[in-house]
Length: 110
Length: 120
Image (cartoon, rainbow over all chains, first blue to last red; front, side):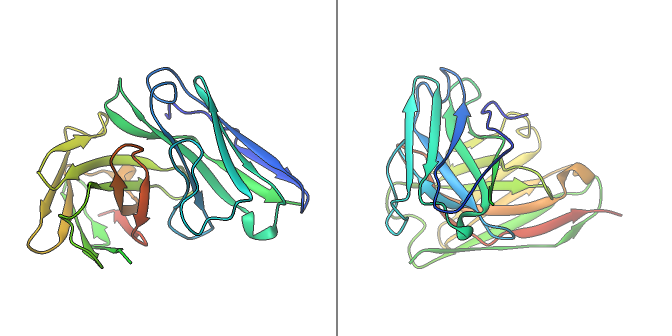
């Protein structure tokens, strides 16, 4: 059972904006960097956001990350059909002394 | 461009030990400030971090798996490995290897994953 909680699913029409929340605690999000991963169907996860809000080279700037206290968010603007995927937040947890993934959110483009 | 590739048996019998190797190409496993991780994903479920190793040999493991997991590194072969003992059907999953960076802990390069089924 993950210590990082995400909504199971979100959906929105093309060209709209969606936000995915990730709720944690002081031992993980509150004290460590949050990373986000995109997993397309049948593929390996891909790093989308690191250090809370930084984009790796090659990642579209339609993706953005933010963090406040013990929660983090991923926003996708200008939603496209190719964004349909599972999204996971992740962070180091000082209490568990391990890396934890969120429960995952499936994004559907209507 | 760094690439990672998992290899190992796709079928393991219950109570036996699952063994996988990740081969790193496109760069030395010893260069830079990186560590090397294993992650797994049961069919239709989320990602579970198994553990990581630094090229110094230092390791961190998921507390829920710690008693059964060993991760090792062979810098001469540019490989790192996973051993998971006393497997059950619950260990059936796609297993990924990945590279992680110091600081953010982000996993920036992943292997394609390999399915391991535990069944008699």
